[in-house]
Image 1 (tube, rainbow, N blue to C red):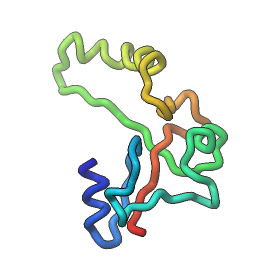
Image 2: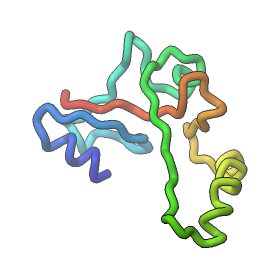
Image 3: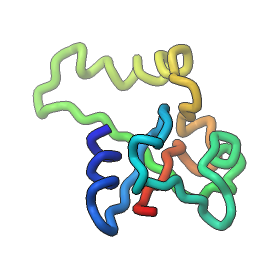
Image 4: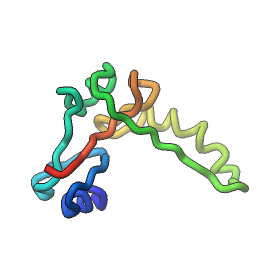
Length: 104
């Protein structure tokens, strides 16, 4: 929400975020289509929406056992507990879907 609020109040700002709510309270924020393709899960999966991002988890130089095990745990967890519209990298042709936002 902080990113969306920043984009809403900052002239010429651009950013990306997963949107799980109405943008009515952010009148200066718009969802951007790329080459006529809307940022939908289907368009990300079929490769027609050409913007994507990947999240990279990092650990310290001396990670705990839990931190070392986390990269093996995460894919299985996301497969079973992903929020609606979430796309894993392996499920999309071009990457994980995010929505590109800019000022209206």
